[in-house]
Image 1 (tube, rainbow, N blue to C red):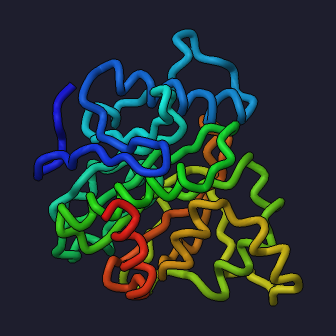
Image 2 (cartoon, rainbow, N blue to C red):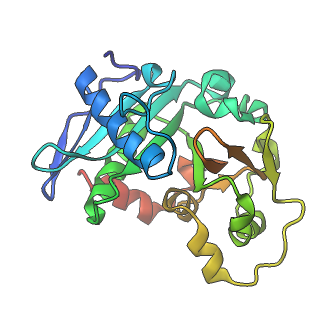
Length: 258
């Protein structure tokens, strides 16, 4: 296993009984893939894979982060890939599903976040905090201007989340000059027929935790969702310009491992 990022990998950090660190071996990568299998395959009700791991062709080009407890059990993980500018996004995971041509003029480094998951038995918020702390440190180390990825709703019946999509259409659509275009055979275009939000609480409750975190920091989404039968999810492209993060929130993120 080799390092993929353009700067040295950050050191491991230990806080509140947990360690967050970059994967440095094939065994580390396998541990992350096993947790992903639990979260994205088993928990989603998909047929188990023979080796009990969630893998794809993008793993080899990404750096992987693990959050472990004091016994070395992996309770959280995610992967990141760095792109020098928007012109390089043709090779990113999200470009399989979205036409990102409008982001090509973006001239700062960009970090794609993927496969973010927390063990379903973990109830300690510190696991998520440690993950976000390392992500914040990595984004800073890369000098990234934007964090992006796919935020997934469970299942492929997107109409279940009509209230959430109305909320996204009303408040969180990407700027027109950065809006991803359709590049997938099965999509749900929710912006054109959005309705007034009837129940704000219900709409917020339908948002996946990762997407909600993006949005509270100033993130935006595509105007359509992709129906992904392979992963049994409905997902939206999500972007977050680092400069848009409220200063108090940015300070708090940087303080997690500080």
